[in-house]
Image 1 (cartoon, protein in one colour):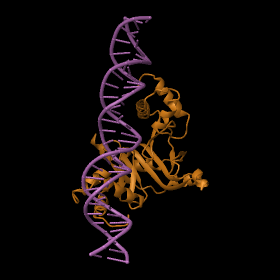
Image 2 (spheres, chains in turn purple, red, yellow, cyan):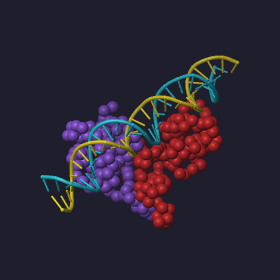
Image 3 (cartoon, rainbow over the protein chains, first blue to last red):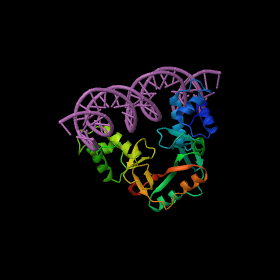
Image 4 (cartoon, helix red, strand yellow):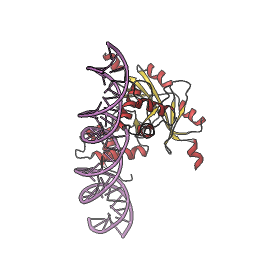
Length: 125
Length: 125
DNA sequence: CCCAAATCAGTAATGATTACTATTTTATTA
DNA sequence: TAATAAAATAGTAATCATTACTGATTTGGG
C-alpha cells in the first residue's frame, strides 16, 4: 500500500463517518454512492490492507461477518443478539493483557466482547 | 435434542478428552476413528445443538473457524497468531459484565481473547 | 410390536471472502 | 511532457467453512 487511490480514500471516509462497526458489504454499498462502479473485491482488499497496517480495526463478534472500526484505540464491544448492533465500551484497565503476560504469553491485542441484549431492544418489548 | 445417539456421545467423548479447542473438522476426523462413516453434517448439527443447549461452548477467535470447548465455565482465551493454538486463562473478575450492565446492556456471555505469541512459539525463535 | 419423532448419511447449496487477470492509475525520473 | 515500472482496479471465477435438503434408519413411549 504505497500509492494513493480515490477508492481507498472513499472507504476510509465512509468508515470514519459511522460508529456502527459495519461489514465489508455495508461499506461497499455506501461507497458505491461515491464511486458507483467500485468493485467489492477492492473494498475487501483495502479493508484488509488498512487493518493489517493498523489504520483501522478488524472486529469479529462471531456473527459470521467481519466488522470494521475506524477507532483504533483499545475499547470493548457490546454485541446485541437481537438486533446485531455493536456498541463501544471503555474499560479502565486491561486485565487480560496483564494476566496473559504473567502466563508467558505476549499479547498484541486483547478483545473484549459482551454478548446479550442492548438497552434499545430491552425497552422495545 | 431429545433422543440419544451414539454419534453425539462420540462427539462429546472426543471433545471432553482434549483441551485444544478444536474445530468441527478436527472433531470429525477424530470421531471417524470411532464411527468411520459418520457424516460431517452430523458433527456440525450436534455441535450446534450442544452449544445452543449450553452443554459445550462455541468460540470464535477470528481465524475463520468455529472452535468448541467442553469447559463451559467462564474463562478467557489466549490465541497465538503463529501456531494458532488457544490456551485458557482464568480472570478473577468479569469487568466487562459489570461495565456493560452499568451502561444498560444485559450481558449473557462475555468473551475475552488475547491475540499474540504463545510461550512455546517465543522460545522456538 | 407399532408408530411418530428424532437422527442420520450422503449430497447439494449457500455465501462471505479470496484469487486471478487484463486494464488503468499513480509516482518517479528524464 | 513523455516514458516507465509498480500499485491499484473492475470484473469475474474460485474457495471453503458451514448449512440445508432428502430419503433411510434409529430411538423411545405406549
